[in-house]
Image (cartoon, rainbow, N blue to C red):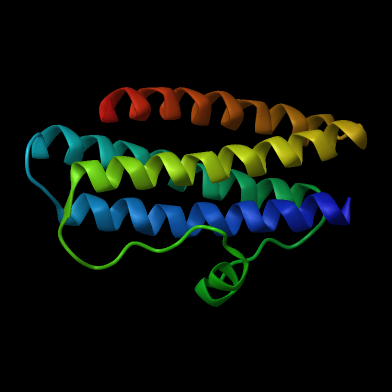
Length: 145
């Protein structure tokens, strides 16, 4: 179980950094389709915020402690922060595809581990994320073609 929780804390860290990145992009997006992208980024960071809470609470349900500081998150994340600068949609989309790919891979790793340990609550929780991230990647890839 400890290995699953360790990976869930990495996932939690990635979600926390990704949340800040989405908010940064939301504030700094410029150019064509500003209104639509600005609104979509807010939708994305609100969803990620809910996932942060859900993963942290699930770690507690499993009897462990979730990471909770920015220092912890930065020490454990695999997602790069966004720069504090104006950004165009093509850069945002490319970065979101990369980050959702990371999140999808992490979710799949956790699911596999949970299935091997018959940890059905974790496995079923992660199913939602796998479906969500796969769909978002499909849609984002459609935007960059």
